[in-house]
Length: 395
View (tube, one colour):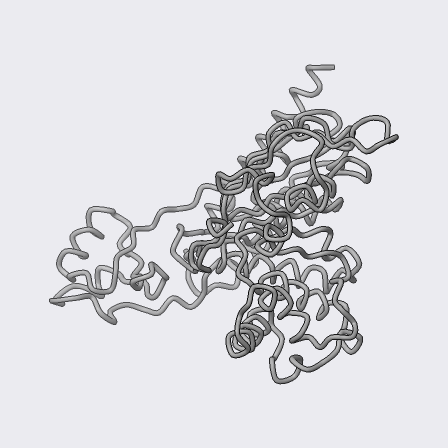
C-alpha cells in the first residue's frame, strides 16, 4: 500500500476504471454497467448526473466501500482488489455532505483520526492538525478545541476537508460535499477547494448533480445516465460547446453565450504568450529579446516562474548586468481557474492593458487582455452557432 502515498509536493495518482459493473441483489438493472474511466493524476473529475445514475456507487467502489461485481479499478498501477480495504481507505480521503464529524470529539480529535490509526506520534499529529486548520482557513487557536455543534455548516465542511487531508492522501473522494449549504457559503467553499487544489494537486473525484458546480470546479466532467454509464467525458468548455447527445444538452439546460462566458475558465482559452524572463537575466540579452519579439515589453519572474515585474525597452537601455529590480511591479494577476466573466471584470479594473495569468502554484501561464477575451468570446459564439446548425441539420 505504501506506493499509494506521495509527499504533498507530488500530488495525486492516476485512477483507471475498466469495465466496472455493480449489480445489487434484487435490484433489476445494474447500478453501474461496464463503466470505463481514466482519471489523470492531480485532476478534479466530476461525476455529474441525475439521481439514480450511479454517481455515488461509482465513487464508493474506488475506496471499496462498495465492492464491484466485476471489472477492475487500478489506482497508481495497482489493482484495488489486491489492497486490504482498511489500508486502502486510510490513504484515500473521503468528504461527505454535512461533513459527518463525530459530535463527541473536538475538531482536533476529528482531524487526527486517520493519523492516529497510522501510528503517528502526538507531536506530529498536533502539528498536522494546526497546519490543516490554517490551510482550510480556520484559526487553530479558535477552532482546535471546539466541538462540531458550535460550528456553522461551512466551518464543519472545512473541518471535513481537513480531516480528509490529514494523512496527506493522494486521492480525495467528495460526495456532494457542499450540497446542503446556502449558495454564498457553497460558492466560497468551491473557491477554497480550487485554491487548495492548486497547491496540493490531489486526484479528486467529486460527485454532484449541480451543473454549475460541475462546470466550475471540474478539470474533466463525466456525465452519467442510467443504467450507470458515461455518455460524455470531456473538459467543461467542450461539454458546453459540443454536447454529445440530446440527453447531455437537456441536462445542461439552455445554452447561451452569456452562460459560456460565466462558466468558461481562463485556462480553457488560448492565452497571449508574452515573453518572460528570470530576474537574473542579463539586461543586454533581455533587451535584444524584447526587440526581437516586437511588443516592447516582457514579464520578469522569480525562480518559481511567478510574475514579479513588467519591464520595457526604456527600462533596460543603458543598464548592465542582471535585470534585478528594473521595471514596474505587477499590480494584479488573473487565476487560470477564474471564469471569463470574472476575468473581464478584473481586466476593466486593472492598471495595465495586459495582465499575467497564474497557473498552479502561481506560476506564469500566459497573459490576458481585453482583445484576448474578445477573441475567446467570438470563438465561443462561433462554436455555439456551429452546434445549433449541426443540431438543426440533424433534425
